[in-house]
Image (cartoon, rainbow, N blue to C red; front, side, top):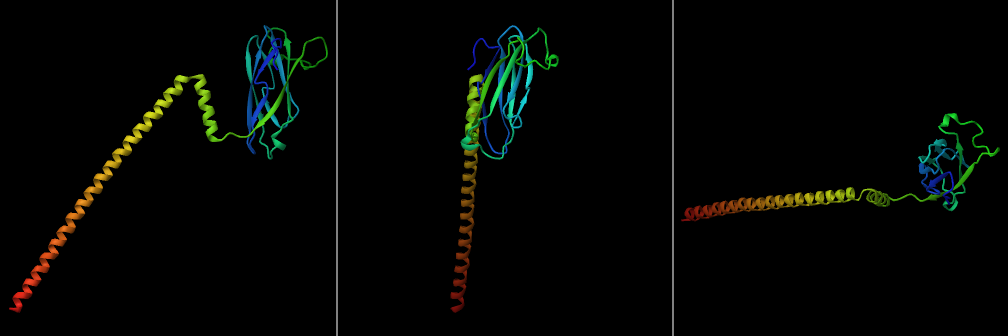
Length: 214
């Protein structure tokens, strides 16, 4: 766990990766300088070919912080029982004022000598990939926690959009009903006219037949 007297504090205290075959995954570490000194850091891992760390070395100014992105390279198979034995080590040491990363001597992170070299161990945790709904829920929760007014506005916009779509569908339905009723009336009128004409022709034929018989 992070101790208040440490040069650097790290959040989160473990690296959690969404593990999915043939897909990269990353975890961001926020490293904060808890002192009034310039502090250099270096990230090491037991599996350097498996992870991509940027920046893996740097200098944090007094009371400042930086974000380290650790990327898990695409893997071709799942680890046994989704357990990971990889470890990370964050080393830190105090520097002279105004020292920058390009000025770091080669022995900055050597344990030899009188300088103080602190180390923070971080374990790795693999998690199954999120479903689409879980990702959406997580995104909404994260956005709501940071800006609840924005979330409420978005929900109201979605509600208004749904209401408008419902109204449009109702209008289309009324138009379809009107067109169907009109076609029914027109079809009935045509059929009625044909029936009347047929009756007239039949009556005329019968009348002509009777007259010719007389």
